Length: 147
Image (cartoon, rainbow, N blue to C red; front, top):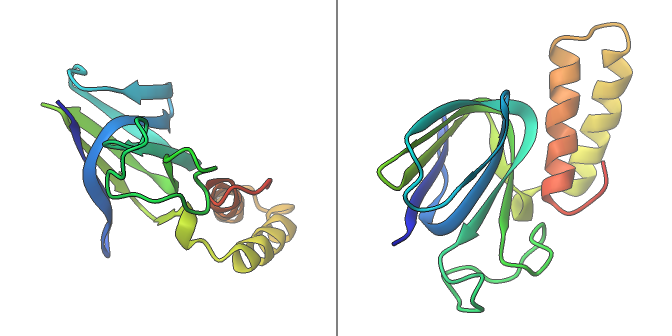
Protein backbone atom coordinates (compact mmCIF):
# COMPACT_ATOMS: atom_id res chain seq x y z
CA UNK A 1 0.00 0.00 0.00
CA UNK A 2 1.07 3.55 -0.61
CA UNK A 3 0.02 7.02 0.35
CA UNK A 4 -1.47 9.30 -2.25
CA UNK A 5 -0.08 12.76 -1.56
CA UNK A 6 -1.18 16.12 -2.92
CA UNK A 7 0.61 19.39 -2.16
CA UNK A 8 -1.51 22.31 -3.32
CA UNK A 9 -1.55 26.09 -3.02
CA UNK A 10 -4.38 28.46 -3.96
CA UNK A 11 -2.90 28.83 -7.45
CA UNK A 12 -2.85 25.08 -8.11
CA UNK A 13 -1.01 21.83 -7.57
CA UNK A 14 2.68 21.87 -6.60
CA UNK A 15 3.19 18.08 -6.45
CA UNK A 16 1.07 14.96 -6.44
CA UNK A 17 1.92 11.29 -6.49
CA UNK A 18 2.29 8.11 -4.52
CA UNK A 19 4.63 8.12 -1.55
CA UNK A 20 5.94 5.82 1.15
CA UNK A 21 6.24 8.49 3.85
CA UNK A 22 5.47 12.12 4.60
CA UNK A 23 7.03 14.18 7.39
CA UNK A 24 5.69 17.62 8.29
CA UNK A 25 5.95 20.13 11.12
CA UNK A 26 2.66 21.21 12.65
CA UNK A 27 1.92 23.61 15.48
CA UNK A 28 1.60 20.53 17.71
CA UNK A 29 4.98 19.11 16.65
CA UNK A 30 6.43 16.96 13.90
CA UNK A 31 4.25 14.27 12.34
CA UNK A 32 5.35 11.29 10.31
CA UNK A 33 2.76 9.59 8.13
CA UNK A 34 2.89 6.01 6.84
CA UNK A 35 0.13 3.91 5.29
CA UNK A 36 -2.63 3.06 7.73
CA UNK A 37 -2.18 6.28 9.72
CA UNK A 38 -5.20 7.34 11.75
CA UNK A 39 -7.12 10.32 10.38
CA UNK A 40 -5.67 13.63 11.50
CA UNK A 41 -5.94 17.31 10.69
CA UNK A 42 -3.02 19.56 11.60
CA UNK A 43 -2.02 23.17 11.14
CA UNK A 44 1.32 23.45 9.34
CA UNK A 45 3.98 25.54 11.00
CA UNK A 46 4.74 28.56 8.82
CA UNK A 47 8.21 28.56 7.32
CA UNK A 48 8.69 24.82 7.67
CA UNK A 49 9.80 22.06 5.31
CA UNK A 50 7.55 19.16 4.34
CA UNK A 51 9.43 16.01 3.31
CA UNK A 52 7.89 13.42 0.97
CA UNK A 53 9.49 10.07 0.12
CA UNK A 54 8.04 9.11 -3.27
CA UNK A 55 7.07 5.47 -3.86
CA UNK A 56 10.14 3.39 -4.73
CA UNK A 57 12.65 6.08 -3.80
CA UNK A 58 13.89 4.32 -0.64
CA UNK A 59 14.47 1.03 -2.43
CA UNK A 60 16.53 2.65 -5.16
CA UNK A 61 13.71 2.36 -7.71
CA UNK A 62 12.90 5.31 -9.90
CA UNK A 63 9.46 5.95 -8.41
CA UNK A 64 9.19 8.84 -10.82
CA UNK A 65 11.80 10.86 -8.97
CA UNK A 66 15.42 11.38 -9.79
CA UNK A 67 18.01 12.85 -7.46
CA UNK A 68 17.61 16.60 -7.46
CA UNK A 69 18.54 19.69 -5.52
CA UNK A 70 17.16 19.67 -2.02
CA UNK A 71 16.99 15.87 -1.72
CA UNK A 72 20.57 15.16 -0.72
CA UNK A 73 20.46 12.28 -3.21
CA UNK A 74 18.23 10.35 -0.80
CA UNK A 75 15.11 10.53 -2.95
CA UNK A 76 13.18 12.68 -0.48
CA UNK A 77 11.31 15.61 -2.00
CA UNK A 78 11.47 18.69 0.19
CA UNK A 79 9.04 21.57 -0.05
CA UNK A 80 9.05 24.87 1.81
CA UNK A 81 5.59 25.78 3.05
CA UNK A 82 4.32 29.11 4.31
CA UNK A 83 1.61 27.77 6.61
CA UNK A 84 -1.56 25.86 5.87
CA UNK A 85 -3.11 22.52 6.77
CA UNK A 86 -2.27 18.83 6.61
CA UNK A 87 -5.07 16.28 6.32
CA UNK A 88 -4.61 12.51 6.56
CA UNK A 89 -7.44 10.02 5.92
CA UNK A 90 -7.71 6.67 4.14
CA UNK A 91 -4.05 6.70 2.99
CA UNK A 92 -4.55 10.11 1.37
CA UNK A 93 -2.43 13.05 2.51
CA UNK A 94 -3.53 16.53 1.48
CA UNK A 95 -1.14 19.38 2.16
CA UNK A 96 -2.99 22.65 1.65
CA UNK A 97 -0.44 25.42 1.89
CA UNK A 98 -0.77 29.19 1.70
CA UNK A 99 2.44 29.16 -0.35
CA UNK A 100 4.86 26.35 -1.23
CA UNK A 101 7.78 25.56 -3.48
CA UNK A 102 9.73 22.36 -4.08
CA UNK A 103 13.37 22.53 -3.05
CA UNK A 104 14.43 21.71 -6.62
CA UNK A 105 12.53 24.77 -7.88
CA UNK A 106 13.93 27.29 -5.41
CA UNK A 107 15.83 30.25 -6.85
CA UNK A 108 18.53 30.24 -4.19
CA UNK A 109 19.89 33.72 -4.87
CA UNK A 110 16.40 35.26 -4.84
CA UNK A 111 15.50 33.40 -1.65
CA UNK A 112 18.74 34.53 0.04
CA UNK A 113 18.10 38.16 -1.05
CA UNK A 114 14.48 37.94 0.12
CA UNK A 115 15.59 36.51 3.46
CA UNK A 116 18.11 39.29 4.00
CA UNK A 117 15.54 41.95 3.11
CA UNK A 118 12.81 40.39 5.29
CA UNK A 119 15.18 40.02 8.25
CA UNK A 120 16.13 43.68 7.97
CA UNK A 121 12.49 44.76 7.84
CA UNK A 122 11.43 42.33 10.60
CA UNK A 123 13.62 44.00 13.23
CA UNK A 124 10.89 46.53 13.95
CA UNK A 125 7.84 44.43 12.99
CA UNK A 126 7.40 40.86 14.21
CA UNK A 127 4.33 39.92 12.16
CA UNK A 128 4.30 39.69 8.36
CA UNK A 129 7.99 40.34 7.73
CA UNK A 130 9.04 37.70 10.27
CA UNK A 131 6.68 35.17 8.65
CA UNK A 132 8.12 36.01 5.23
CA UNK A 133 11.67 35.64 6.58
CA UNK A 134 10.74 32.19 7.93
CA UNK A 135 9.37 31.18 4.53
CA UNK A 136 12.52 32.32 2.71
CA UNK A 137 14.64 30.40 5.25
CA UNK A 138 12.48 27.30 4.65
CA UNK A 139 13.04 27.66 0.89
CA UNK A 140 16.79 27.61 1.44
CA UNK A 141 16.54 24.58 3.74
CA UNK A 142 14.35 22.78 1.19
CA UNK A 143 16.99 23.50 -1.45
CA UNK A 144 19.67 21.97 0.78
CA UNK A 145 21.33 25.15 2.01
CA UNK A 146 21.83 26.58 5.47
CA UNK A 147 19.53 29.48 6.18
